[in-house]
Length: 293
Image (cartoon, rainbow, N blue to C red):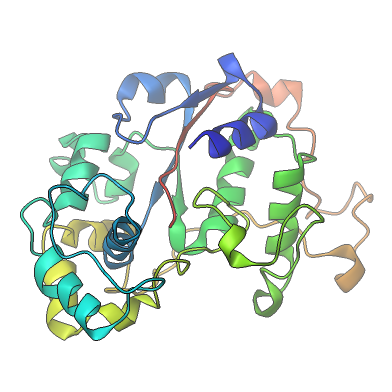
């Protein structure tokens, strides 16, 4: 959305330094050759539930052609709504396998023929943002982009708040609000990277999937997503084998002096050295991050 677009322009710059890939456009090798590509991935059960709940509010592209949307707002978790989701909406020919088809279209099908062991390396993507761990993985991707030569404005309000959210313990994450952000979750938008708003329009994912429905997704058309991206199961998390770049902990909580140049955890707020820039592929950034509702 536009809000997300202009937020990223504040973070990394405008025009020639950033490429926005529209939601239904293909991430092609040409873009990958000239830009550092950040894309997003989401556990399929959670993603399907999101599409259904969003459509149940009267929004989205499926309203006219697909039956089985929820009727009982705001969370569409009544017995009849859950039954409609499981047995009507998910089974509709337009919906069944849609995430797999979308994935093939966005990233091309050549990587499915690639016999290399780590298939993630065959995607035209440099770094993945995982919706289930959105803040930490987005931060890590921006740091990777910075390390290979890109510029990131860490003082931008959106990004400085994002970093602070990551720095606090998980138990208190989400409670740090700046003066311009309301605490009422109804004010959050689907493009807000500071808050997990996946349950704005529905209850917890596991409430909507019984064993049969979970198996239908987990071992159906989207099975390759579970296998390639490490998701443990329907509505489940990931086997976190990837190494994320994390921000340093809060100085006032842990006593670090972040003005100390010898501190190995000090973030590179001004990018990397000019000597390093000579060896990197490019300093442009391509953004292809899907909605997180």
